[in-house]
Amino acid sequence: MTVKTTHLDPEELHYNPAFTQGVIAPAAQTLYVGGQLGTDSTGNLLGGIEAQTTQAMRNVLTVLAAADTGPEHVVKLNIYLVNGVDAQLGYAAARSVWGDHRTAITVVSTAAHARPGALVEIDAVAIVPE
Image (tube, rainbow, N blue to C red; front, top):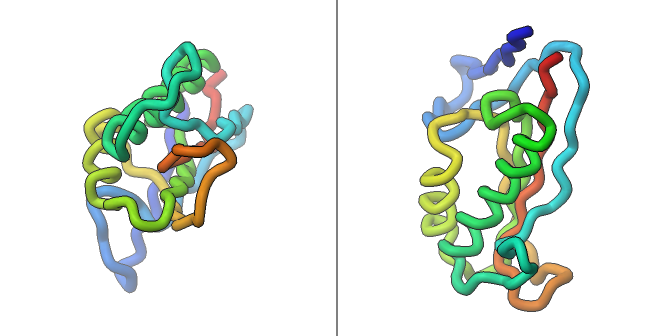
């Protein structure tokens, strides 16, 4: 079964090609992807915002794939960046892995993450097609 999300981009709000202002998701099973850090399969934290963001996004994609879904079914991404990191480097790294899948996104600046040295954490909400 193919399920599609509907993007909401009201004319009264700024249009952004990287994200949408809202997403309507059809009734379906929901996957909540827990916060993913820039760690490899052995738990080693990669260095730098670009490497960590790329890996964190790959980790999100891995969880999506395990549930037989993908970025086209993500209705919400939350990205938590440690204060002082170059957000533009993080955005570029994320997009290099994520591609052009527009979704609702919130980016939050934090003082630190629970794991020392972690510069970014990404979580997601997705629908799982039947």
